[in-house]
Length: 493
Image (cartoon, rainbow, N blue to C red; front, top):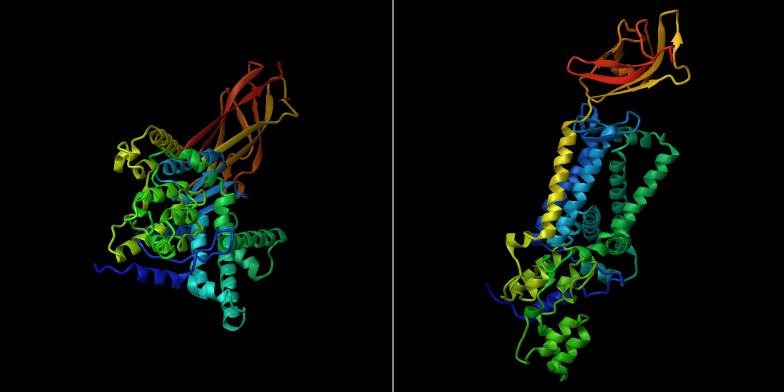
C-alpha cells in the first residue's frame, strides 16, 4: 500500500467541513466501512420488519395486531389472549436485561446499531444528502442566500422527511387499527378527529426527532445515556481513542514548530481532556503520534462529539469514527485501530486487561446473562401454555336462589366464553357436580357470533342436600375441555 503524505489527508479534510461545536448546527459526513456495513446489516432487517408486521397479512390479519375490540393479540396468525399479557412483561424484562448485558460488555452498541432513534436519524441524513448534497456542500450552501435551486432542494428535503414520518406513523398506527381501513378512511376523508389528531402529532414528533432534534434526544431525553456510566466497568469495551498511540498529534506539532511555541503549550490549549494534556506534555520533542488531527472522526460523528476528548455521555458507539480513522490510517500506512472498541484497562496497558471471551466471563455479565436466560425460558413456557379457550362464570348476586317447588331449587349464572384459536367454531356447554342437574340455556355456543358475549344460564336440581355445593360448568370442543367451578346454593341456607 502506497503511503500518502499527511498534507494530502489534511487537504481532503479541509475540503470537507470544519468541526462545529455540537451546540451549533453541524453536518454529518457519511462514511463507509465495516462498522457501517454491520450497522446496516442490523438496522435494515429491523426497519423492514417494522413495516412488514403491519402491512403483510396472514388470513386477513397483519403479522402483528393488537385488537382492543376483540381483546386479542394476533401474532403471525397465532392468537394470544389479553390474559396472557404477563408474557409481554417477561419479554420486556428479558429485553431490558439483554440491554444491560450489552451495555456492560460493549457500551451503547444498542443505541448505535439498533435503536429506532438512530435508525430513523441515519435514514433522514441519507434523505438530506440525496436532496441537498454532501456535508461540505450543505455547509457551504447554508452560508448563501436560500433562493433558486437551493430553496427547491430544501423544500424537497422537508417534503421527503414529512412523507417518511407520515408513512412511519401510519405503519405504527396499523398495529392497533387495520392499516388498510386506516388508509381508506384517510382517502375518503372519513377519519375521526381523534385519529387525525394522533396521526398529525406522531408525524410531527417523528419529523422533529429524526430530522431536526436528532442527537439531542440521545443526550437529553434518553435515560440510557445517563445511567450508562453506572453500568460500565474497567473492562467494558467502548469506542475509544488510543491516547498513548495518537498523541502528540502531527499537525499540532507542525503548528508549534512554526510559531516557536512548545508543543505541550499548544496541546494544552487545543485539548479539553486533562489526560491528553499530561501525556502530550510528557512526550519527547522527537515523538510523533499517529493522529494527524484531520478531524474526520468528528465530521462523521452523528452526535457531533470529538472521541479524542474521551468517553462522553452523547457517544452512541456507532463506530463511524472507527471506520473514518481506519481509512485515514490505511492511507498514511499506519496500523488501524487508533480508534477502536477498547476497554479502559486495555488502553491503560493493564496486565489484567481481558480480551475475547475472557472479557465476557465477569460476575456482573454472568448475572445479567442468567436473568436473560431465565426470562427467555419463562416467556417460552408462557407461549407454550397460552389459553385457547377462556371461560368466566359469575353467579347472579341479586337473587341467590329460586325455589321452584317443594324439592327443586334453581340458581342463575352468567357465562362468557372467548376462543383464541381459529380452529374453534362451537363450544358445548354442560354442568356437573350434583345429581339430576338440569341446565336451562343455550347448550351450544357459536364462537363466530357469540364469542365474548355474556349469556344467562339457569341450573336446577332436586337432589341438593347441603346449603352450599360445588358444581362445574364443562365447556368442550373436539380437541379440548375446560372446567369452571362455581357454587350452588339451596333454600336450606
